[in-house]
Length: 204
Image (cartoon, rainbow, N blue to C red; front, top):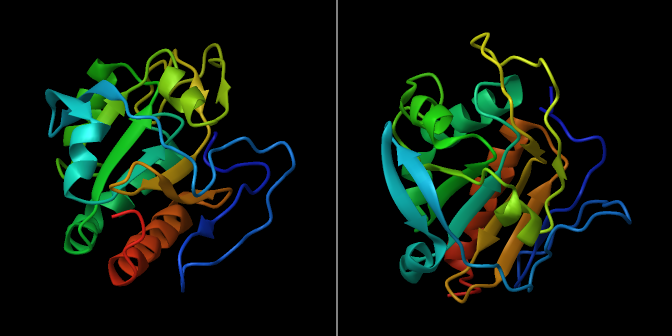
């Protein structure tokens, strides 16, 4: 459910040595490299504890991975969160922070962020309950599916943001847009991009 996208968006990396382009549909509206990434502040959770995440503050120390995902406790999103958690040391070594964003309530994200099988207390996830943050990045948001339950058997009850990841440089510009791939591939491509960015620091 919402674990894969019906059509690819794009992986476009700026700067010398960072050019890799995948096919993207004409209807794709996600922000592309070079665009200004909207700063946002949102309630978030790390290891089950609520906090306020500010993109403007986070990017002061380096690039920030902002990844939108459909819903906590669903197949692809569980796998993606687990993959990010397992690779957080590598993201940190590359100087990058990571924030997940979904339309989940903060209560659901409190559970998700501390679950040892998924976020495992290693990365924060933010609540974009009305989908406005996702829409500001050009990420497609769809309505809730009535009666759909998550991997715990609980009602989801919220809309979905399409799975798209952005790397935002210290200058507030989008450095890379990654979408249209499976959850695990999304993390792999994102890590590769931030590691390349460390070598050719565009947006710093």
